[in-house]
Length: 308
Image 1 (cartoon, rainbow, N blue to C red):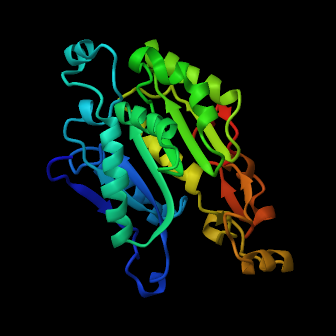
Image 2: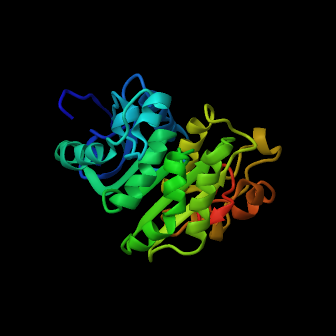
């Protein structure tokens, strides 16, 4: 990028512990991820997973932007109009992607125990960068998290042309988490065009979900909660319901049945967990004690083919 650039990294708790010496972790790259940008609050969400265990640990990498309205946006036809409204010349996104592909990712992979599964996330113009990267360089990442992406860009180009872009994406295990606040105007219309294109078909192995939050979040408020929801959706951790003690249940602790003991002794993984919701399990908890459960938490997607 022609100058020094800060990269912020949060390693999972216990990364250096002896028992984790061979463990490898997925990586989530945050655009606008400088120390004074979105990295600190996203790192806080990552840290919350150490306490509530609702999503698996990952390496978080924040990529600082300096002149974001140039660096992470696509080219534009009427450059003068964008310069007048945004105060910067557009068109730096391709160079920024090369920076990630040729410098940032190799730097991270050489220093940390990465698993090979990578995600990119961003909000607003950074969300537009996420969508454009999915379309222009789909093999750069495995998971794409676009929070209220600025799909108004170039008269909604990436919504209007989404069908052609999707047809060009090769088959493979890729996922898109897409969400939207109370944007209105071409911002909302552009996202709507993208959703319509996704509904008409996606490449083999491509999973996606659209979480509409226009009635509950603003452009300024959506990112924090959306990041948590995306982490739980894509990297959800299974859990068990245990029999409570007498102070909580109001009756003495009973002996575990043979079936409950078998459940307790069995390994609990994302692959063998039963999908459920808090609404389903909140009554009759005794009946499912020690069962391995994968909760679908947070807002409900309104469209998509991804089963959380």
